[in-house]
Image 1 (cartoon, one colour):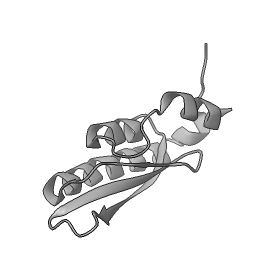
Image 2: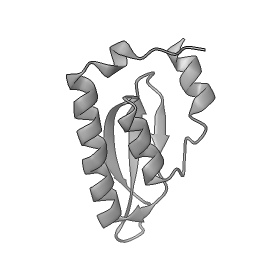
Image 3: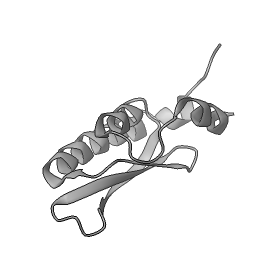
Image 4: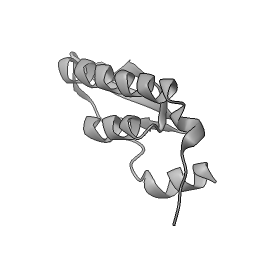
Length: 94
């Protein structure tokens, strides 16, 4: 059920903004995130994030400073979600 809801509401899978990834983590939908290189572009990185249903979302390429700041924010939200057992308590109504 949850994976179907995520498919319907998470419309961006690749080339997403950093703010979108942060918001998914804020809602407790992210389980882990990692930084990847952007195919030889110097000082550009992207974030690849796994969601609670096992699917992945990937940001566009941004300057490494922006990506490092976003990964910190995302990891804080992932930590809160783990601490509060958010993936177990996600409910979809309506």
